[in-house]
Amino acid sequence: MAREREKYINSINLNSQTDFPYLVLDVVNDRSYPRNPGFHVMHWHEDLQFGYVLEGAVVLETLDESWKVSEGEGFFINKNVIHTVRRLGNCHYKSFIFPTYFLGFYEGSPARDIVDSITENEEITCLSFANKEAWKTSVNENLAILADMEKEKTEYYAYEILLRLASLWLTLRKNITLPEQRKESAVHLRMKKILQYIEEHYGEDITLEDMAASASISKTECARCFKTSLNTTPYKYLTEFRLSKAARRLKTTDDPIGTIAAEAGFHQVSHFGKLFKEKTGSSPREYRRK
Image (cartoon, rainbow, N blue to C red; front, side, top):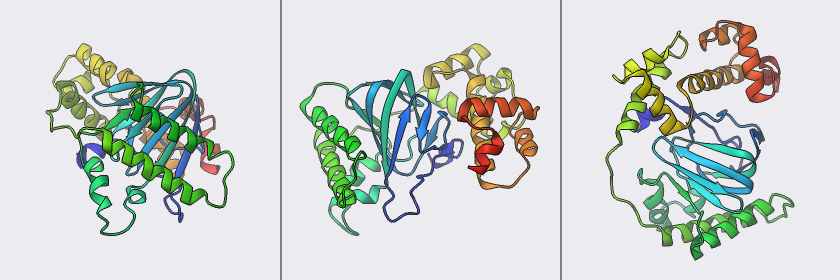
């Protein structure tokens, strides 16, 4: 699993170096406040994530499954799960991202078993709270409160957040059944090979035929796998993956923009700049400055 994650963007908690690494993302359509790496390609993070849809609807996707989550409903994403959240039309949602140790109380606490029973189970990837079961209604009500708490933070904000998250987690653990191990699907296995190939060759001239050959399947089957697992096309995924890699280098290096564009697989700097601005709202130079 660790090697598989190496092929995707690791989205870092922007508050990870603070004394309260709790990150709330306010997402309106394709814009996140504050800005967060990922660009709607598949990514993962070491933290846990709850989300709550305020308006419209989103689709939560992993490599194998997808869930529609509508207004007034929430979702959970386990740590280290490769995923993306895609909007359906106009939408507004909040994500609440935090480390697992928020829930354990203290080193050696017996509460750790309640946390680990979910976080260490790779079969629990994501959960949707999208039906009217009483416990899911309770979870959604608590997520709505978390969203409201961002409007006016009191002096007790951090403590109130910790209590609310612990309450959410207890409700979750009491009401879900821990799944048994399952075998990976054929589509998942094929996508692992294709995405590993993209990770290793994204700076080169990759064709649909190359991607299909990496998994020993036809071009038609390759396109179907992308549609089934990621709801996108091979070309769109490749482009957004390249943009994500370029964004990371813009943020972490002083390399010339032309060099970054070329090594990410873009032959023309002007074309790279156009696509980058469409995705981020900023030119590469502006993004680096910000």
